[in-house]
Amino acid sequence: MILSSASPTLAPGGGLLLVAVALGLYALAALQGLVMRQPPLRRFAAAALVGAWVLHGVLLVIDIFGVGVPEPGARLGFAPVLSMTVWLVIAVYTVESRLVPLPAVRQGLAVAGLLAVLVCAVFPGELRPITNPLAPVHFALGVGAYGLFGAAVLHAWMLDAAERRLRGGAQAGGAQAGRGMPLLQLERVTFRFVEAGFVVLTATLVLGLATTVHWRWSDHKAVFSLLAWGVFAGLLAGRRLRGWRGRRATRWLYVGAVLLLLAYVGSRFVLEVLLGRPPT
Image (tube, rainbow, N blue to C red; front, side, top):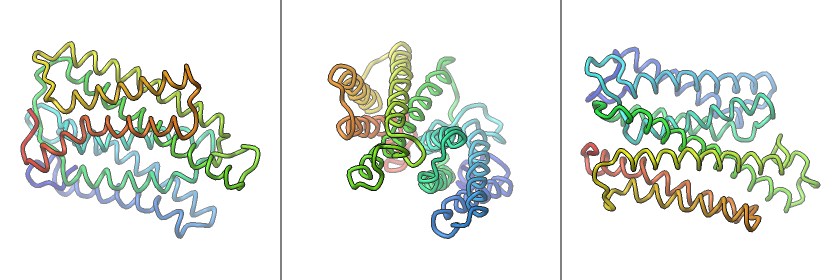
């Protein structure tokens, strides 16, 4: 978020310090599964993840809104959006872990947070003026959809892992199959996130279509977004009408999530990094 010398968003020293502390806390949280096996150290690792998440949020505000830069605008590149998505998923985990112990996913989320902060520090994106008053709403809805589907993917991964353990006979009867969350409850939570994400994604697409002057099928963001919407619609219809569960349902979710990731983050990555020019 602040490592790029081409577009600093904060005093270099302060910015680098915040990034370094956030990376260090995420690293401590990631190490909990490897070296921190004593209960006090595991509690310290959990606190480190919360601290890193808080600093991560501060860095997102600094970067997206260009704090310290005199020109008004926002950074809406691939890295800030990806970083915000990871931040939202960790937020969901932080809330859920207060209700149901989910230590199995903490290490993976910490690594994801570390990478998100690092990527956003290297590729902060260019500050762009906001010319449409509805643009912030469209952006907030889009990022919200990313976060909700990201949380759905996280729970689908836990669901698949729980089913594999049941097939292997590691935990009979389904009790605590999700390492803290019963299997049926985990499935319900997964599809609650899918349903909420689908509603938000639909609102995002409707707003985008309503504010687009010239529709272009060559716009990869729009095409991949519509494809992702179709996959999620098929998933919800299949679950409601044909009772899709288990791996069939989670595979549809993964495909839709990949398409949605390609819609904004993928297209912006190609433009900003591979082609070296800002998106129009």
